[in-house]
Image (cartoon, rainbow, N blue to C red):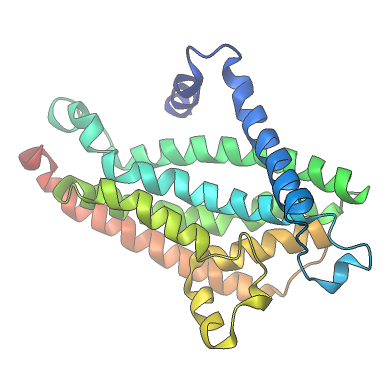
Length: 253
């Protein structure tokens, strides 16, 4: 917790409003999404559950997708440099290196909760109400956190040996943003390609968050439990890979 707090504070140190940026960043993004997509493009989401008034929650739909992607992306992009940027922990100090991905995850969770508050506020402004199912959102996203930890352990260890991962991670993150149903509904994806979108680990989480926050419905439990099992498997494999490869960190660094 102390390292996570230090990581969050260090990000905003020196700025005029400091930690308040963690709130204003998502607020400004939500305002921009509303203006660009709803006012300029006059876009509609195309879900019949919005009713005949069109799509007053378009920005909320997009922002909910961005929240899921941001949780994964913040940890994933930082992972390749986690060990190399903390080489002193490897060479001189007896330190549990496996906690370093938890530090970046803790920072991502902090920003997640702030963004969820903004999302709930945006949903209230857009529809005039907030569904009780929004309280389940943090729990619903827990498997994604577990999956992301597994990926972080794997990538942070691999990043010690393959420095190109630091450059590739940003590109992969952008690819996942546009190959996830963030800016568009999954229903408009051609059926021949739709199955591939479900291979993307972000797709199910994005759809789940929208069901809970925007539509106030509880999705089936079966797919959620399956996602939990898959996330646990990824986390275990990532941790095992990290522990196996860490023996060579000092030699490389």
